[in-house]
Length: 438
Image (cartoon, rainbow, N blue to C red; front, side):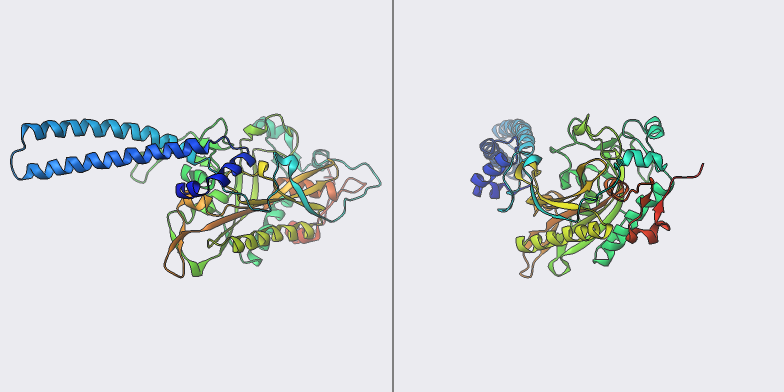
């Protein structure tokens, strides 16, 4: 979330960002609502001051009939204005949460993902002397995934990983987690069941509160019990990535500049309702409700140049892993129309799926500046003793489904087996997946 003073001082740029990011927000309306909000607060403060003055006058003796009547009128008036102020404040927040970060100067202007720019491609598309299979056929032939029983037990987009499919996916997770620690990222296994503030703070609620019609998040219906046995009715949610949990770790805290940047990573199950993707990629593992992932997060001081360097570092680690795995991949610069409200700049990585004949997103590195930290109230004290909001960045280091798919389709052989990338073999314990003997 942005600072309202900043929005006023940079209203022209914010308007442009609203337009380029395809956000439904009227900045003039926001500023007018803020004017009303502040005017009502001034009026409330003035009435309270009058009430306090009357109360002080009454302490010196019995209040007069006129003072009693005036006190009653002021009490009624402040209740009315506070009720109006509450409505205005709610409208103000509903508009404020939509206010976007102004994208970086080098972010391409575009209307949708179709306008993202390819910044580079690495490796070569594999060539086969046979018609390559897609990951669905390979997974079923090699008995790595059971889609039918997955749908029976979990419903639409459900699946079971089996046998060497399980070992291959877990090897990807361990490989990524070890890579992160080698690069100086402190590993976490964070909570996947979280309070709403963590998801609002990181920007996973489209508005000020959870909306099941648009937010691709699972809400838990069951209420919790406190330590004393009392019922806690606070809403809880399943995360779609470790990012909200990792960012909320420092919520409400003030850090020290000398401790920045903080590099952390988290392994977690991930849950996504995919309500916005109804009818898309209905078969296979490309778009599923649950999977595993290793996520990178960096928290740094409020310095754009340093944040840019750290974003390059993060995407660089992902690129290194793609190359060590032997993937043909490319990097995209995300355009304004495909950039969410809070993002300053973002990159995606996509791996080539030769059996499916398409690119698949396998990573995404985003720089939010202070948009998330303002929501989560994470600050630091700089060398001059001034408190500032930190900058927050994140990157999908390794999701489980699409790299798994890429390995199957890229390293399949004519005899129907799949070779395992060398960097994973110490985790799998085997170098090839063959058809199981039944």
